[in-house]
Image 1 (cartoon, rainbow, N blue to C red):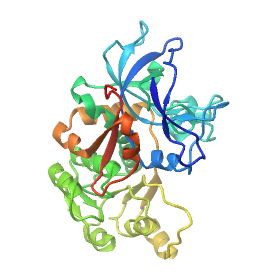
Image 2 (cartoon, rainbow, N blue to C red):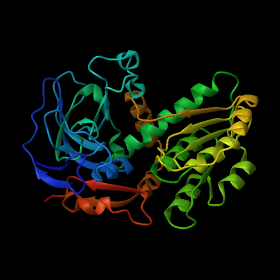
Image 3 (cartoon, helix red, strand yellow):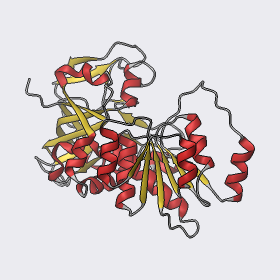
Image 4 (cartoon, rainbow, N blue to C red):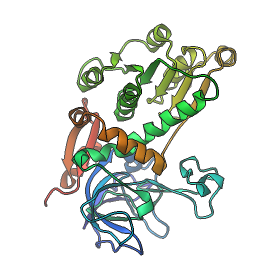
Length: 352
């Protein structure tokens, strides 16, 4: 089989590799890979900024945004040949912390978790892969090629779950949400907010291209003005922050409604200094009972929530998120961003 592999820590090592077909272990599914999404994490790993190979190995199979079709499934697994599935990314550590032991390994306390395609486990960027049934999620057959969006949707499903849990500490009936960043995470967060009946606003720096159109098709409102101007006018009850831009993060923290919840999903670059009136931020958060919470990764519950959300979404709108499909043989093109990219997907069944 062909697989997309690299040597973590070595820039320029990404290549297409011929590997032996995998043999499923006891109880595992054998899955034919259909597609794998490419995100910022994948590009960082390819640029040697991140990533770990499996123990005793130099190379890692890349890819954590999966989509596949079951080829073989053991009896009693709950799956059958032909089922459309995605694989969960994270695995609990071998000596689980309290969170991992309770299935909440997305909130691992000791950092000894592993991740498919990222940390010490081969990913899903291969023509064939194996997965344990408890880490596979079945999809509605109607999703077809759109199922590759489940992993990023699981991230925002968890983010929204955190928002509702935090808000639930007292009476919480939000009306208005602001999503900052109109990449895949931001747009999918906006989709879930609209489905929840909120008035959703999306802020991004571009004024043209597919992003404003996708937001408008959702029935949300698109903005590309100054963040202070937009946020101070809206005073959102909820903010889903999906950029990781330091100045923007603190700007939205300053401009929420009382009892506002800000959920941070964007990872900031280190080394960039931002001037912040820390006293004002502290004062506002205390006097208005505001909350800022970080959220990353997802567990199987969030994958199931994501699969349900996508199954109920407009397939034409979802298809608009995937702005480029690149065959596996031309994988390098997927790692060169283009101006109007939203989500780039590598197809694994390109019939070479």
